[in-house]
Each structure stands twice: as C-alpha cells, then as structure tokens.
Image (cartoon, rainbow, N blue to C red; front, side, top):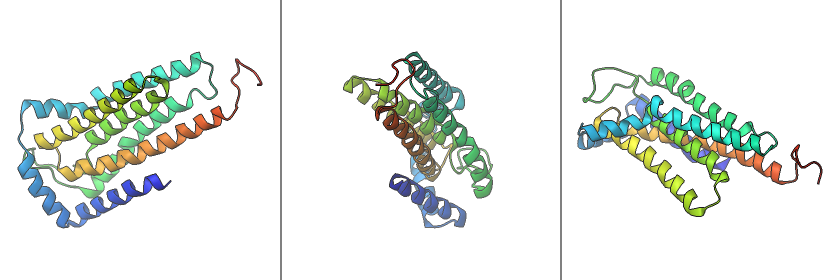
Length: 212
C-alpha cells in the first residue's frame, strides 16, 4: 500500500493548487506558454489518448489474456481481464466529477471553455496502455520482448502527454495530475493481479491437473 502514497499525495497537492489558484498554477501557465506550438505532429501524438485509439488496444490485450488463461484452464482466469476493464471504467468515473469540481479553463490555444483538469486523454492513455502492458508481461518469456513492451508503453504515454501540452489541449499540470491518477489505478491493478498470481503459484490446482 506504500506504493499508493506518493501518487495520491502528489495528486492532492496539484489539485489543491489548481483549486486555490496557487503559485504552481502561475508556474504551470508560464511553462505552457513556452511549450505550446500547435502543429500536425503534436495533434497526431495527442490522438494517442483518444478513446477510439487507446481503448481498442486495451480491449485486444484483455481478450488475449482471457483467451490465454482460459485455454490453460487457469483458476480465476477471468480476474486479470476483468480487473483491467474495471481500471479503464474508473477513468471517466473519476475524471468527470473532478473536471466539474475544479472547473479549470483551457489554454489560450483552445476555444474558451472550462473543465480541463485533469486530462482525460492522458488518464486514458496511462491506464489503457499501462494496463495492457501489466497484463501481458507475465505471459512473455523473452526479457527483450518484455523490455520492448515496457518501452513501447512508456513511449505511447509520453507521446500522448507531450502532444496534448504541445498542441495546447491541456496545461502541463492537467497532464501531471492524470499521471498520478493513472499510477494509482495501475498500482491497484498490479496488486490485485500479483496477489492472484501468488495464490495460484502457492499450490492452488487447476481443474485440468487435479490435486498435486
């Protein structure tokens, strides 16, 4: 549970600063002015956080994990894909009320509107690509493939985050807060799946093998 502490505290600090319009917000706005430069590349990178792009990637990973576990007749094979889907479902459930409560305006690069904090696109990217990676890693035997998957996941998340800030769709703090939120959801997913794996490796027999 100690893993949850840092992202929760950092998220609380950022949210507090946004609500009270504290000094971090002033720094955030100055940083945004230096970083924003809308172009086609940043827009394409920002699209990596779209639901239409990120969620199908996660859905494919969940389907493969479910098929893999079912084909090997594993105990509670349905738990990892169900937990991954639940983590993804929690993103809009958490982000939507936070947007309404904080009511943060957008950057000068977007039409006047409120509800930009935290970044839903960033949270979607973090949880979709991160959950897919966490669930697929135990199924991969090659260390090189495992490292490649982690690097790919990090690249997709950072690419989406950079694109959102560069294009001006979000302030940097919007993105940083969603990293924290995603880290909390992924940590919960990892704890649940790893606990289930430890229980299975401790000697719980599958229906196919019978008692050992």
